[in-house]
Each structure stands twice: as structure tokens, then as C-alpha cells.
Image 1 (cartoon, helix red, strand yellow):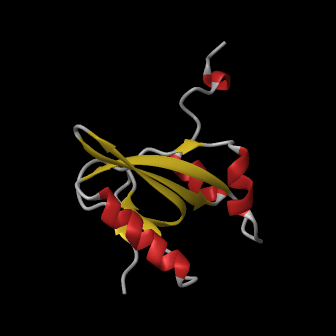
Image 2 (tube, rainbow, N blue to C red; image 1 turned 90 degrees about the vertical axis):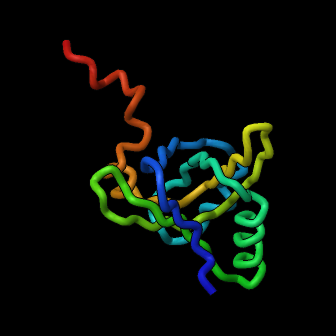
Image 3 (tube, rainbow, N blue to C red; image 1 turned 180 degrees about the horizontal axis):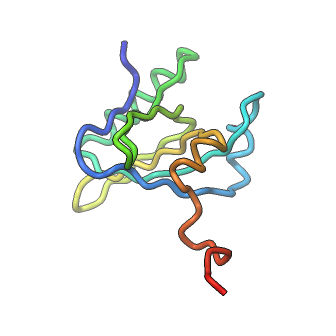
Amino acid sequence: MDDNITIIEGPPPTFAPVHDSWLLGLHEGTQNGNVVVTQLRTFNGAALLERCHRAWSSRGSTHLVFRSSDGLERQSPIVAARNIELPEGNLLLLWVHMTQEEQAELAIGKEGDDNDDPE
């Protein structure tokens, strides 16, 4: 069974670094990297959330599959998910694990960096 969540249309997702203490338990292991979060609009967030829960309850994994701004297909393991029902539709929050190299390629956390100002 394919437990991936694939973005099939629209712009590449934007990711933001997170520093919540509850994420420390999700980041255990030998992999280097951090957990980042993205927000996705969807028609059926509850079904996507259920797909994640089924994979995790069977000790499997699920991945977010997306195209980055350079057009290459990327895949990142989803470590947590939350569906928020809004009047406009569903908003799916996905926390994914990314290596330091992936974060650098996608420029995560670089928007507000004061070190980029010319002197």
C-alpha cells in the first residue's frame, strides 16, 4: 500500500524550522537533521491524517512527496501530522524530517536571516 502523501499540483511547499520541545521525542535516532513544518491545503485532510496513522500503527512510515523549486522530486519522512478544519477547507500541518543538506538546498529558515544584509 502506498502511504505517501504526494503534492500533485501547485507551487512547491514552504517549510519552516520548528523548535518545540515535544519534537525532541520524534527526532531520536542516528539520522542527522531536523524536523520542519509545512502547511498544505487539502480537500480531505482527515483521510490523509488517517493514512499516516495507519502507517505508524503498523510500524511503517509515510513520506511527503513533492517537487522542489528546481523541479526535482523530493521525499521526506512525515513524523507528525494534524488536520485543521477551516471554513475554507482543510489545512494539513505536516512535520517532516530533513537532513541538513536537504534544508540547505531548500533554503529553510533563510528568509529572516540578518546576516544576509550588505554592509
